[in-house]
Image (cartoon, rainbow, N blue to C red):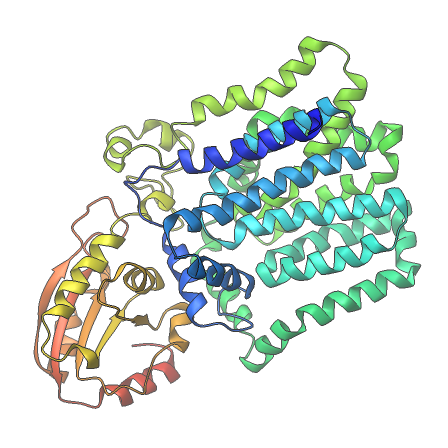
Length: 502
């Protein structure tokens, strides 16, 4: 094995080690992960919240045993592949071995370590952004049309993974128009490649059409409930934190794209950066939506630094800074301290704005951390309630949100299936069963009227249990048990599905 390949393998190995090391067993999975894992049981060309690629990966995880090891493995794999693509981008730009090492170091010790811990579409999204930029660089450098078609295929995969990839095109199109690369617009292979990409994503577009374009409803709901709390100034601050130790390399990259002759043919990447960030700001996007934008600029910056900086000490400083910055962040941005430790020492987290949730308020734990607590407790307590029933087979387990339903389905030892009128679960009710009993999982903030509204529909009903972990986002979530229905539960479910509410 060559020295170059041995070093690359070392970075990839380090990536996997860090991803498993930086999270402790005190935490469960995060609420979004349960939904994505459950999608493996309901394969389709689309879902209310995401396109289908994540469900395909979930199906593979299920085939491998559905263990936490494999759930953690695939985000780590996508992160490792991102490092690989950054490395190959440096090589495509004729960068030296040191440039490869510098870019890989910057990519490794960055926000990707946090992003690649969770089984969500985000890790694949960043990989696709990075790969698309790499393929465009390869085409510009070689004029080989195969890279255009490869671009179309990867864009299709990215689109079928997360619609966020559309922002990449929002940034690229005006950038192409402003530079000499506008000649791409008269290249027939560009349009044939676009047609190829359109054909590949057409099953999802057809699914969207057949289901009334739920992505529009989802984005509207997201804008009303979450993005409305996004402060544009906070968005810009978050961009500085994502690759904090690598900011000099990124700034150098932007400078080099305007002034360094060997990189002048890639000038469109400077404008792509400007227009993409502008689009994110305009649409009040969450900060992490833009993470995929940055890895390619690590490659540009590393190539320029290697060519223009001859001092070994200064080169070493560029490579060491991401690691130096990472060390103090090690105990803050990762779930590697117990929830109790974080709650008792919140100052560092508050200073970084990590305690602010999507509701715009500060809480005891970072939202992602609080979203990784209480789920095993919930599933265990629902199992216990279910086991007490004389006829458990005709019991509906109805939850308030997808995290509750997905966690119960993942951890349950009773082989039960929970549902909710929230997210994709609204399409997953099994109305072939005749329901007689109801286990109702109700969020704490909405539990007060449950007995008053639901109890008259059943012969008996009472509070069976609740989540007692005070640091969990689901703290206080209550489990109600209602037995022997006086009404046709199935008819009411069908009616509520049509109205999209319970």
